[in-house]
Every structure is written in C-alpha cells, then in structure tokens.
Image: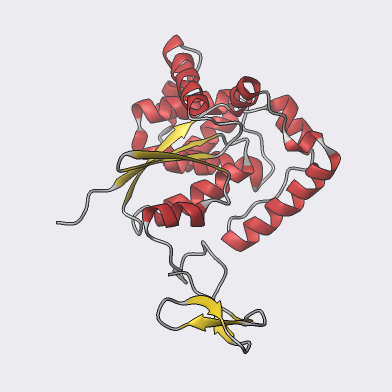
Length: 257
C-alpha cells in the first residue's frame, strides 16, 4: 500500500487565463504526483477587492506583457488559449459572476463534472471568444461537458439562491485567508505545513515541495530536454546532476531530478 495522497486546493476563476494554465497542469499531474486535487471555484473580483490589488491589464505595459505571456504559455503547455477580441469588455464589463456561481452549484451537486464544465467555460471565453454570462452560454458549456439539458437547467435555476451565493463567498474568503491577492492560488497541505503558491508559474516549486521534481516528456510541465552549454568555470556533477565549479566549461543535458 502506497503513501496516502497529499491534498492540493486550486482556487480559480474562469475569467483568469492563468487559472486555466494552472488547472490543466494540475489535472495532468495529479495522478503522477499522487495528490488529491480539490477544485475551488472562486470569484476573482472578490479577491481583488479584498486585497486592494488591481488587474495587470489596467497598466498598458503590463497589458501588453500579459497578452504575449498568455499566448506563449499556451503554446508551451499546449493549452489552446486565444485572447478575446474585445479583451477589456470581456474582463471588466461582462465578468464571471454567474459562471462561477454555476460552477459552485456543480461542485455541490455533481462534483464529478466540475473539471469538465470548468474546462468548457474556459474554452468558450479563452479559446473561441464566446460568451459565458448568458444562461444559454452556460447551458451550452454544461451540455458539452456531458451534463443533460435537464440537469444543467436545474442547476442554473439555483445560481441566485442564498446557499450558492454564500458558498461562493465562503470559498473566496477562504482564499483571502490563505493570503490570496489574485488567482490562481494553489494551496498545498503537506505534513504539518501549508503552502500558498500564487500563479501558474509555480508548478516546479510545487513539484519540489512534493518531492516530485522531474521531467515527464509526455506531459509538458517543463520544456523538452535539450542540450545547453554550462557557464564557463562550471561542470555537471554526474552523481547528483547538478553544476559544480570546474576549470573548464562543459556541455550537459538539461534535467530535473
């Protein structure tokens, strides 16, 4: 009998493209890393308000960087991200409140479908530039994820109930208590320690904390193996696969061990 899975919580909002990237990496690696992945639909607007943070897209230079960054990361991680044509209208005017309430209901009633429904909502907004705010849009995503029309309509009717509103609020507050100032946030519960990691670019650090830092060629967490040159004066240690001082330069094959 192997070790029990460690618990990871992913706080996410489908309005966040970086949340999608983190979501896909964690879904790919949850079995390999032997973790219990708990998906936590969260409202990013509530996180920003509570923390006093501002969306990076409000600053022109950051907005340009984010657009290029998301595109490149999508290519690297093989996630089909394409930015909406009217980026600011989608993010700041339409938002994601109804979609995140719907995912909250899905988690309450059909948690086995939460991963698929979340992915379909991301596909709509961040891959096909489609709406996620209108009832028909949400129903279409739910049905594409495998939910029956009757099930989807029943859940959609509950998005404005106090139970669902309070649950989404409580999840958002839980993320804030962990120290969230944006999304995604991954919370790792490891032995007696709890770690809050912000962003989609902390997966190698997470792997390190889990003791699982290594390359899986078939799952693109890290770039493919390639030959690179050591800095002058350093040489690879064959025993530990790390670099150490040397009088000569050397070439080595990149690896995470």
